[in-house]
Length: 255
Image (cartoon, rainbow, N blue to C red; front, side, top):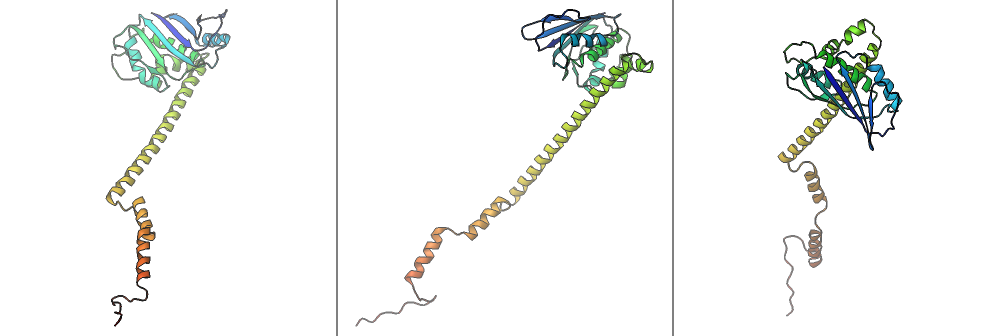
């Protein structure tokens, strides 16, 4: 089994000597980092953290994360069954053919270089696990299943160095996504309420056109009759002073 991880960071760096793990490529607008690993490699977590610090890239946003794998007999099954668990950590993972033994996997999501030590370590363990037999079921792995599959649960029990940090990273990522999901659901609920309220208001207006602003306009017209009506009333009073309703004016005798 051979794998190559390629990380792209949109920050310019100078050639750095003394890197323990990454191979650095300095470009005009970005920095590319690569790391190769095989079935025998172990413990990349501390090495990645050390290289990131040496490069001066702490906290920088990761623009792209690709991993190319070959020679892993259960690669397709293990990657595909891990997609839902990965989403709970805030990562989108592309699906492979279920029987694939090689392929390119892209990890997308909101991540920085502070995630790299743990993400690289997780993928190292995950790909190495994919070289072993796995059930042909399509049932997705839970987060606990994923941790158990990559040996994290065992390492925690054995108090292996670095295991607690990796587990803490899992917990923080999961809690962050849960909180974001909760907020998004609350916002969606409020928007749905506002839409329902507006639709109900419009429906009431259709049934009773005089309600709402229509009714208000009608009342305003009653209180303030048109100016033409006021003028006509004044003219009648001037032409017929002293006349009572129903009586005709007396005739003048000019003989």
